[in-house]
Length: 107
Image (tube, rainbow, N blue to C red):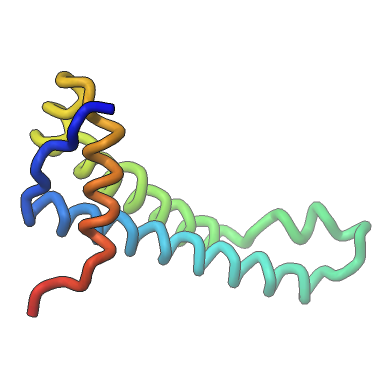
């Protein structure tokens, strides 16, 4: 497997922001889904359970946009990641990036 490119600090910060955005999206959607199951417990209420009120759907749309359109796109289009794709070492570089982002941030 090709070697990973060096991971700069700004890319690590973007990856941490991407992970935080994903966590926020999952936490919100899981919480709302659980609340909806409590509000509409009967199997016949599946439609009501899945149809979120507009204000919650708007929050979900905003969180999805923050993740997909902003955070994930920023990582994907970082010059190092684009170079890794061109040099066919994207997978190794992505693994290195994810490992680096899991390390504690410097104080």
